[in-house]
Image (tube, rainbow, N blue to C red; front, side, top):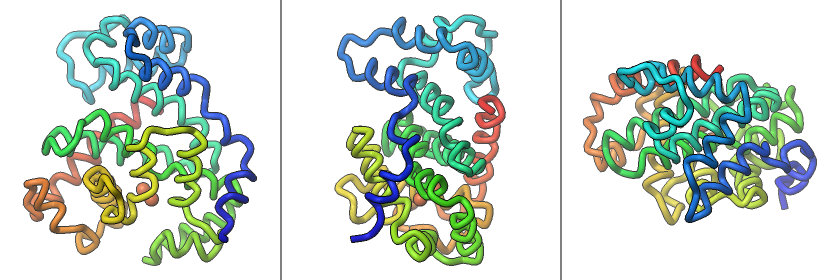
Amino acid sequence: MDKTIELVNGVKDIHAMPSVIVKALNIMKKPTASMKELGDIVMYDQSLTIKFLALVNSAYYGFSQQISSISIALSLLGMTKVKNIIVAVAMKPMMSNAGDKELWKHSMRVASGCEYLASLTKVMDADEAFISGFVHDVGKMVLHMTNEKMYAKVVAMADEGVDIITAERKYFDSDHVKTGSLLAKRWQLPILLANVISYHHAPSLSSIPVPCNLICLVDKLVQTHYNPDSIDKDFVKTLGIDFEDLEELRKIVLQKAEVLINELS
Ligand SMILES: [Fe+2]
Ligand SMILES: [Fe+2]
C-alpha cells in the first residue's frame, strides 16, 4: 500500500470541483442541453464574461469580425469549445492555489497543443483533445497541496533529468498519476479523461492508447528542456508527421498556447 489515498484524503479543498465546472459538465451531459443554459453560466460570472469575450476576439480563434455578445460567441464556437474554456478558466484559481503557478500554464500548453495536433491529424476530436490535455497532470495539485517544499525538491530532481514519477515516489510514496486517477474517480470524470490522467506516462498500458499517446507527445514537446530522444518515433509516424518537422510544430504549439494563456490570465 502506498500513500495515495492518505494524500488525496488529506487535501480537503480539492474534493469539491469548482461549482461552475460542475454546472457546465452537467449541462453537457443532458441530451437536451441548450446553448442558452451554457451561455447563462458565462453571463452570470462577470470575470468569465470578460475573459471569454477577450479570448474569442483574440488571434487564437482568428474570427474576422469583432464579437461583442456572448450569444454570438457561443454560436460561432459551439458548445464543447465553450465548455472547455469554462473549465480552463474556472480551474485556474484551484491550480494556482495548489502552490504551483506553472501548473495551469503547463496544462494550457498541453491542452492547446493537443487541440492543434488533433485538428491537424484528425487522430481524435480536437475539443476532446483540448480537455484531455488540460486535465492530464491534475494529480500534481494533490502533491503540491500536501507539501509545497517537498514538491520543489521533486521538480529540482526532474530538472536534473530524473524521471518525474520516480522523483515523486521517492518523496511522497505515490505519484501524480496515482493521485490524479483517484481524483478522476471521486470527481466522476468521463472515461477518456480518467484514462489520459492514468496513462499519459505509459500510453501502451491504456485501453485507449491514441489519446494517451497524443498527450504524452505534446507533454514532451512543450517542455522547456525539450529532448527529441524522449519522443516515441513510431507514434509520430502513425500521426503522419515527419519526425524532422516536430521542432517546427513545437514552435507553433508554444506560440498558439501563449496567446491563449495571455488572454485567460
Ligand atoms: Fe504527468
Ligand atoms: Fe505534463
